[in-house]
Structures are given as C-alpha cells and as structure tokens.
Amino acid sequence: MFAPLAGRRSFEPMGTIKLLIGFLAIILVVVCAFRVCPPMMANYSFADDLKNVSLMDSQNFQKTDEDVRNDVMRKVREQNLPIEPKQVTVQRINTPGMSALYIAADYSVPISLPFYSFDMHFNPDTGNK
Image (cartoon, rainbow, N blue to C red; front, side, top):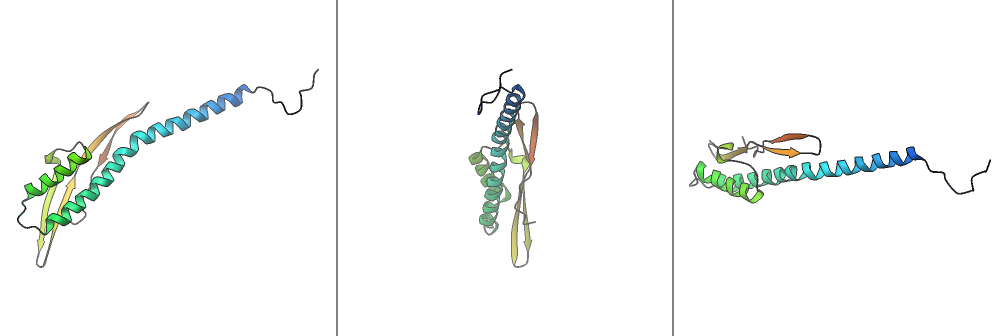
C-alpha cells in the first residue's frame, strides 16, 4: 500500500530484545567482576606483603616463628583477610652461609554472585622453600 518513508526504520521487536539481552549480559559481567576482582587483588597484595615479611625477618635470628606469625597477622588485619593464625605456616630453612624463611597462608573467601555462590581458595607463599 504505502511505501515507507526514506530514512525511517520500522520498529523491530527482536532487535530491541537482543539489545536488552546484550545490556543485561554486560551488566552481569561488570557485577561479577566487581565481586571477584577485589579478593584476587587483595591476595596479590598479601602475597607481596608475605615476601616483604620474609625478606625482613629471615635475617633477624632473634625473631621466633611466633613473632614472624604475628608480623604476618598484622598484614592480614591491614588487608582485612579471613585468616586465623593457625592458617599461617612459618618454616626456617638454615643452611651453611644462607638462611631463608618460608611463609605460607591457606584461606578461602566466599564469593556471592547474582545466581551462583562459591569459595575462592588462595594459598600465597614466599616461594623460598
């Protein structure tokens, strides 16, 4: 009957639905990233703190393993991580002419996404073992 006017598009309901689904998918990815990334970044920062504590305390022979564990727990409180003192492993490795300090922590952080919940498990260590 009537020809559509040039330059005007007709309303396409499937195109609108696809657009909404695309926006919802993008929003879901952003929400998931905001829930998953902070614990991962905190773990990277905590692993760096463990290495610093290990380097500083490995040459101080007056510090006991409990003193080192207390230093680690101070870093845990700074990072606000769910770690108890019994989850921190401290080992001294003494060889002639060289000493090293191995520190490790084992913990999980609960992650709650819109339709799924899980625990992220982390095991940072100094790697000096």
